[in-house]
Length: 104
Image 1 (tube, rainbow, N blue to C red):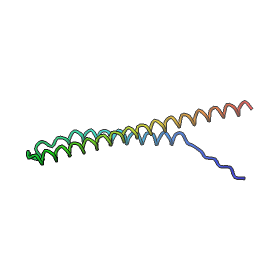
Image 2: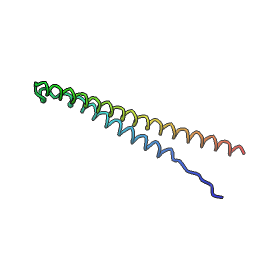
Image 3: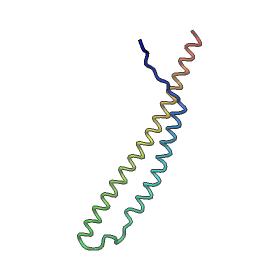
Image 4: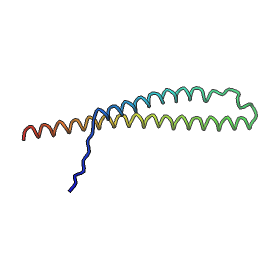
């Protein structure tokens, strides 16, 4: 009978968490820069009614893009927190098991 098991390395989970945090920080800064620049189009669309409609659609799409990217940042931050918590949980469980086996 084969036993299925796996090994977790908490330090690797924490390293991955740091990677997610770094990606979140970089993306967040880029999203803020994009949001500041993208909606500042001044008269690029002209003054005709068709241009006004195009500008309104552009602003709407830009805002939707920024919102989606902000949600992605939140997801990355959530993954980072989850990985850090998982690493701590594995270490706690390992410590408990070690204490039990020392007492046996």
